[in-house]
Image (cartoon, rainbow, N blue to C red; front, top):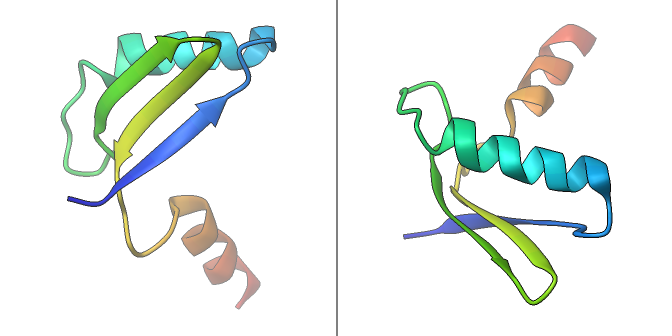
Length: 69
């Protein structure tokens, strides 16, 4: 299984808040239109989020391309 790992800066208050929200909110959601949060880690000054890998890119990239056409 391919995964995507997002590393956040533990020194940044904003990144820590994003990490907490992702763990608390996305960890409970299951929807076919949302990327699944598979796991997370907070250890040794590391904040990691592990998501399912989406091979066709991000929603942002798809929307940006369609608006520029």
